[in-house]
Image 1: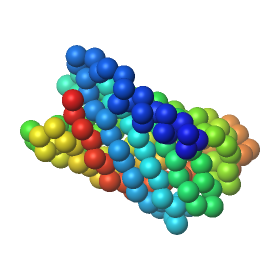
Image 2: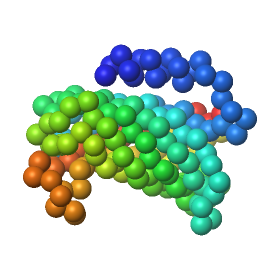
Image 3: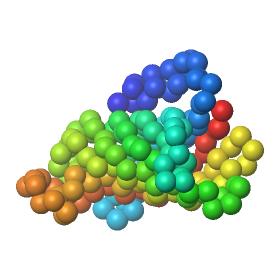
Length: 163
């Protein structure tokens, strides 16, 4: 999966951006709960779209990788909403899905739900945020699989560039 992260990174800088473009984000952090002892990295492209219920909204396409006992990588697609609390301070919520490279003791299926919460600040063309990323197959809520569902959870620091 590391090769996919490299390719995704290179392409994200080579592909011309649309006129209404958006944000490229590098995010990294550490695992908590069942994920403790691991580190994670995310590369995101956020495409802003029409506001929804008064909130800014966007699509987020990301590649992620984490190490540790349950190391893995994922491709993630989520729909995000941003609540602008002030001109500079915002809170984000994203929900969607992820496809994993492999199953692990923490994630027993390759298809996962993906959620992200973040509290951030815009500083000119840059966006700094503290985030929480969660992956789960929903077993605890839906009870639809007999596989493991301990989940993966990461606290992260984000640096985004608005263009």
